[in-house]
Image 1 (tube, rainbow, N blue to C red):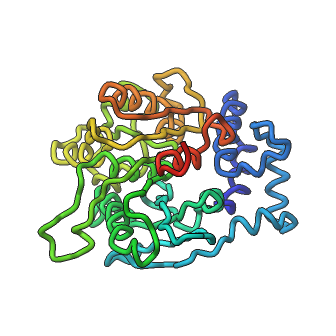
Image 2 (cartoon, one colour):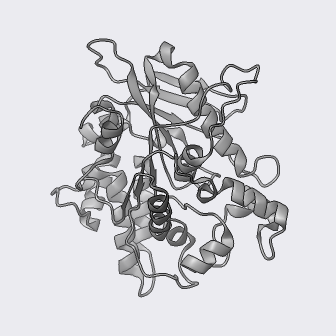
Length: 350
């Protein structure tokens, strides 16, 4: 994850026009969520000067503590969970287990629009310190032909089933599983959590027999509804929504969308699967809740990560009585941290 900071700094410093300051602030908020140690004075705000200093430390190797945190070696690396090349996961297990009690586990899915990204971007340190085992998983990328939007989501569900199937071997608690992820990874976490249980009791594959239900989820900067007409009506912004859509749903996603493609979008959209029995959700957004609709000149990144997605989902979850928290402009040092949320729902703290 940390290797992307120099590029992000460069992008911030080269944003043209009158929107420069607001876009820089938005990106600084995102970086603070990803790199809390960059906030040198601990005031909950990341300045460009602090970001630049952190970049220099990371590239020069002078900040040995940060470098060590970013290179926590997995207990098990590149474990296959399916037949595809990218069906690989890394597992970290906390060092201490005084009585042999199985560990709760957080499964994290990286972002990248379902076309880029890698499990190595995840830093498990704060969760391991809290006594939570961690998994970071790769999944199939979409290509618009053979692998569409449903396929990485199915891979994510398979990760949950694999954890349950191998829980005893890895000393994990199959009854305490949480999901998280950023952007595309957030879509995966929500889709798995809100979708009805995908266990197949009749399958000859023992992994497929396992449940996909989880205790709670922490989606970060996730688009909750992928229907283009809903996005345009409620958020505005650029007409093409996101460059990955054609690879997720096929070329017919532009213009007048045929019903078979609309059906696929509905199936992939977490919004369509929400029900009253869904697990608690901590909806995290790093940007501000700006007024909508957004102008057509807004970036696709600003559109697809806008906190309005979380606001709308919160209202739907509230109507159904599903426990949830919605945070935007999120500071990881806020009233409840992500580890605290997980520990609460794992029964580790009151």
